[in-house]
Image: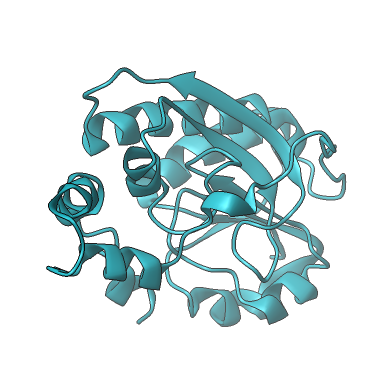
Amino acid sequence: MAVDIILVMKPEEYHYFSVALTRYNPNLQLARVERNKGFDEIANQFAPHCRIISFSTFVIVPAHIIQLVQGNCYNMHPAPAKLPGFDPIGMALYHNMVEFGVVLHKTMARVDSGAIVAERKFAFPAGYTREQIAIDAYKNAVSLTSDYCHLLAFPDQPLPINPQLQWDEQYRSSRQLVRDMQKTDYTIPIDEQLRRYAAFGDCNPEAGLAEINS
């Protein structure tokens, strides 16, 4: 049977969102992908209107798959539009930000560059840890995605775009930038070394990448 929506997320998230989506559209045929190669394995099952929904994941939808579904792809980025790219929590801490958020946006070949549907922000107090920010971001990501399930459940109907919401390239990060921040560099002032360590030094934002790329 043809697949209407592909959910790119963990098993427990798939269970939650499959219930939420089929509440609005009981006839949906769903599938889950958890590895980068998983799309090609089921590509011959895509319905003509097939939609891909990614939720807070390292799995990247390949460009040829985005083209195959005619751009009908949406992603929940667990960070605000101000922080596109890799390890946004580290970037928020490094730049002494006091606000974070999550973004629902269209998926493009370039990570975190598609038109934005919605954004939800929240403040966090000084001294908040990476884990505390991540927990609050996850809660907001679930909430915002749930709020749009009544629209996401109908893959032949595009979601409305909010033109007032745009990505901020000033703070875009990458895996290489984070790796560089984590390197010990005694040529820079000690205050900068401590600042980098506080933001990036005690984490491994690339954990799990080997598995999804297998």
